[in-house]
Image (cartoon, rainbow, N blue to C red; front, top):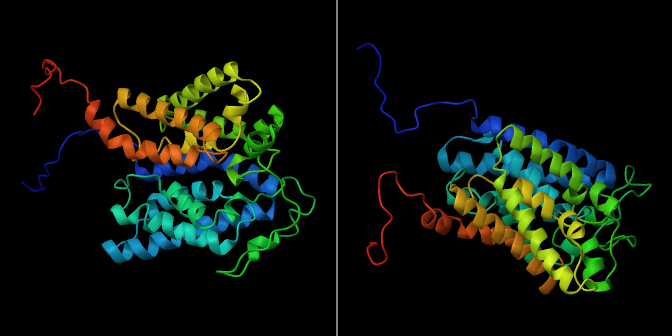
Length: 340
C-alpha cells in the first residue's frame, strides 16, 4: 500500500457545509439588520458593534492560541458571536462595558467549555447576561432612533471612563415593551416592523431579521422548527392572555415584533450547539422558549425575557436529547421498569 488507511466513524459523506461556510452565511444573513441598525442609531450602533466584534476576535485569538497552541479565527464563529453580542446591546452603552461583556462571552461562554461545539449556552447571551447583572442601569438606558446628529456625534455615555458611572444624554426613550408594561402605551406596528423605536441595536427591524432567517432556512443552515416553534408558542399564549384581558396584555403582533424575540428566535435559539438534535426535542425546546418569553414579559419584574428564556432552553437541551431519542429501527419500546 502506498497510501495511509484512515479509519473514521460515520457519516462518511462530506458536504460543502463546513463551519466557516455556515458562519459566513449567518454573517451574511445578519448584514441587512446590522446595516439598518447603523442607519437608525448612527455612530452609537457602529462603535458598539465594532467594539463587540473586535473584542470577541481578540479574545478568541489570545485565549484559544494559549489553550490549544493554535487559533480558530478562521472558522468565523468568533465573528458571528461578536455580531450577535453587539446586536443585543443598547446603543450608547459605555465601550469599556462592551469590552468586558465580549471577554466574558468568549472566555466563559465558549472557550472555558472547550471551544466551538462544546459550549452548552449561547456565548453572546452569556456576555449579555453578565452585563445585565453587573450594570443594570446602563443596560436599560436607551437612545432614541433617528436623531439628527447620530452620524456626527457619539452619546456621552459611550466614552465613559472605565469603572466610572457613565453620564447619559438627556434625550432617551423607553422601549415599546417598557412603555406597555409600565404605562400601557402601545407602539405602532409599522415602527416595530422597521425599527423606528428605542431598544437594543438588534431590535431595529423585525422584518429584516425575519428575511435573514428565511434565507438561512432556504440554504438549510437553520432548523426552521425552532423559530416556528418559538414564535408560534409565543403567539398562542399571547393570544390567550389578550382574550382574557386585552387591556392588560399586548396583542399578538406586538408580542412577536417587539423587543428581541425575533432576533432571539431566528439567530440565537437556533444555535446548533445549544439546541436539540431530535425533531421532538426541537419542538419542545422551541415551545419552552416561546412560553417563557411571554410569561417573563407579562408576569416578571422585567419587560423583556428573551435572553433568560433561551439560556434556560439551552440548559434543558441535554435532557431533551436524552429523553427524545427516536427508537432504533427494529427495537421495541422499553416498558416502564425495564429501563436501566
